[in-house]
Image (cartoon, rainbow, N blue to C red; front, side, top):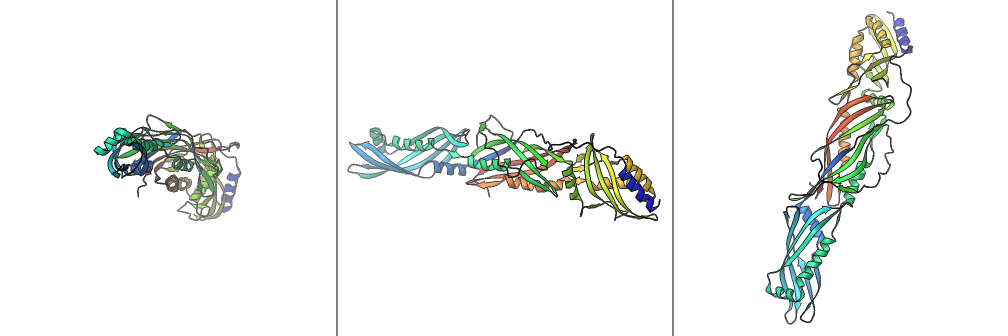
Length: 443
């Protein structure tokens, strides 16, 4: 076949009818249609962290007056550090208190007291950690103060002061959870070369499991999300998230690592741009026999359940006495599949027109060879691309705030399905991750 004949064949094939035909354009954005999932945070407040919270809830000193021996007698008290014990679902806090009481003729006397606080920690629907069923005991073995107790209730005054502080105590978790919520609800930009996409975790609710006391307080939280990725991004990346929804206390939540399936909806135009990430300088050199021959300008569309790849084939052919420069379009069609996070089209075959053209090229090289090498070259390793997503998601979901911090780790991202639609491709990706809230923040 002459060089002129090859060029004519390539031009004729490119100009002929396509098979399968390109479907009409369908207006509207790509639809991800996500299913709800739960992002579970495990909260761990260590015994030391809980002790610090209680230290802030109970004042160190107090004072007042009691009726004793016909007059108001001033008293004061100062407590020492707490000792925390866990008793079933309740906290048992004990400490020593030094009290002073001014007595006639004797002046100011110091009395040792024993303080005991028993309470159950809970989290209300407004995200406040409180103590319920709180009881406070103030006792003393000193016979002098026991006599004063019978007269004026000095111990009751001290007890009531501490009880009032504890009943009014509320540690507001909302700032910490709001920061985590806003990070989750905010669209995460995902640049893929020239293609611009974003991940969106639309939050519809928050749930809290029962509190577990085990050398501290542990509790599971679940953020109910509808995750999706769109190419291009379907919402502005700077759009503010909606307000934090009310907390729902539930009987149980799934524990341990959680899995979230994210549908990725990509328009074929954006997918073609993302495919160029595998190209070097816009060209994909695929042939070992003819290293100057390359593919470029990828276009993607679907017909029925197949993907059609339109590629421009260009470059010189110098083999078997034939010297010609090719420049025209070829077409491949097949069913997309994902194997071990690698996007492939294993049954990729040239269309009728392209097969006819490749058959005429047998004098120059084997048509099966270009098909096999094109299959290999068009394999897209999504695992490498997900490394940046894993890092970004783990970084964006983790932060420190106040006494605590949030740690997140996306352990694995796996593609579980790929389905072509009329105007977009939907890929299902499952992320396995762990997240925790810690007080204090571990080093």
